[in-house]
Length: 59
Image (tube, rainbow, N blue to C red; front, side):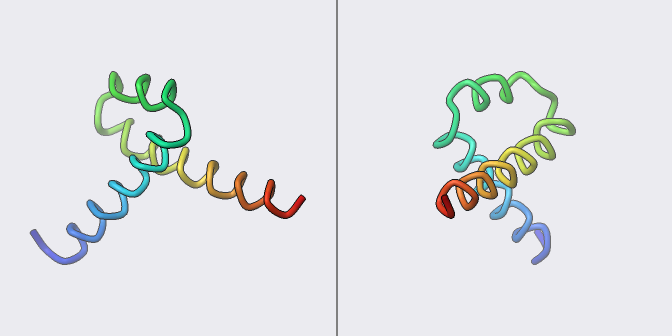
């Protein structure tokens, strides 16, 4: 495994944890998606969750 691949895997695992902690239903639904769709959807969910949390904290 090259360095960038390892970094990608680590980052994706963080996204999975964000989804698992943030929404059990999104996490469960993501398990039935093919990985070519699941991985980008998981990253998008994590981005949206983190930015929403930042916006909520600013209120």
